[in-house]
Image (cartoon, rainbow, N blue to C red):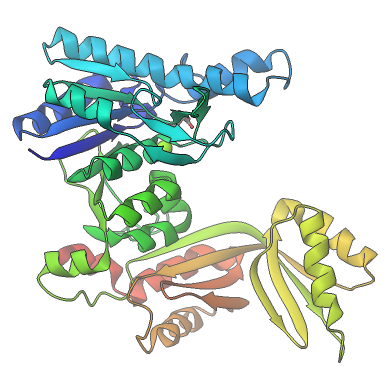
Length: 409
Ligand code: ASP
Ligand code: MG
């Protein structure tokens, strides 16, 4: 019998009605004879009584003094409560189960409180409980150091718990149940006919910038990718299989052919300022000065492009004034263009496929959109456009690459 890991996010376990849906998915898995591990997040969102943010607020009424170690003790409670409530529900429905904390589930982490890394997972205890025919409910987002200190894995870390357990247990799938039906070709609020993707690769989902990161934590994807465990991102509210996240060869095999869809999605990130510094002949040391000054000020730079006559990069809009002041102090005359947007064109098949950039330029030129800067990797091409052009750019690219048709094929 295969092992299945199901992870239910905060909204999925927030209300009795939602928990009936959780129960439905648990029953479905059991009917398919899976050995089942269920990972839960804390119930609800900020403002809900036992959500992680609400717990943090409780301590914050006395300021920001809570030490990281104690903060972990506080934050780990949310998942414990959620797991125990689910356990109670399963017991009432006569489904044998037990709850394990991260530490009890064998998740050993570094001692880096509030943002610990998993060092190893020892699934012995989980396997023993599964052998006894129980559904094993594991509190997400937490682990334990070798000294028995409770740690948490960074916000959104329940996904990481799920894929780390999936990897250690060689699970058949890790199902990430959330409040969307899956991964889309674009943000449906921008592109009306955005389609739901049946499958994407691990790299693609990480490159789907905000969208990808919102539905599943990138670190969780990385762990699944390393162990080659397929993930399904799916909705708690429906029985739809969602979006399968796996590696490229697997996708090709599933499709019975090598996949030729070059581009799978378009995403956007508004709110960045382009910084440009023109260099005079031989002013090479400016590069070092600029980036060192940004680093010293803790300003993260993106979209970096350096050539002998110019340095260009982006910073978040909020940090633009600070960046400008620093550059002026260095005796430079930066040009700043605020409120730009980074638009990403994502597809694992980009590398080696001619004409992708030509198509991007064509789509944007047709709409009179100027590309301010561009960059590329083997799975993504990024273009920087003015913020006012962002929506038009995303729609034009979505149309140009025929993404609305994906789901019909
Ligand atoms: N409850 C934790 C958080 O809000 C972990 C998670 O939900 O994934 O960050
Ligand atoms: Mg999450």
